[in-house]
Length: 68
Image 1 (cartoon, rainbow, N blue to C red):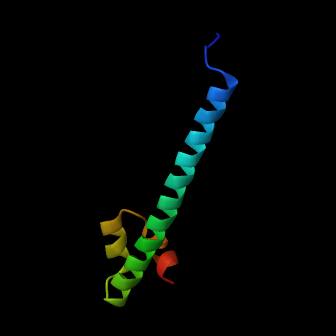
Image 2: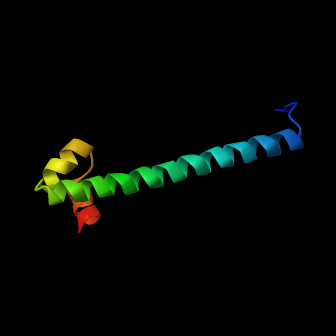
């Protein structure tokens, strides 16, 4: 199978996708950090790890790790 795409075009495309991927990864990291902070606040307010986990959609153990 052959394509009409040049090496230069392919390089640009792959570089663009890599940049998009990096942006998404950074956004995910930031979102997780904010979620962990929110979980800590909820724990301080008296919420159980299980209650937070149910609301957030992660395991109880994940909440415990984030908040300990």
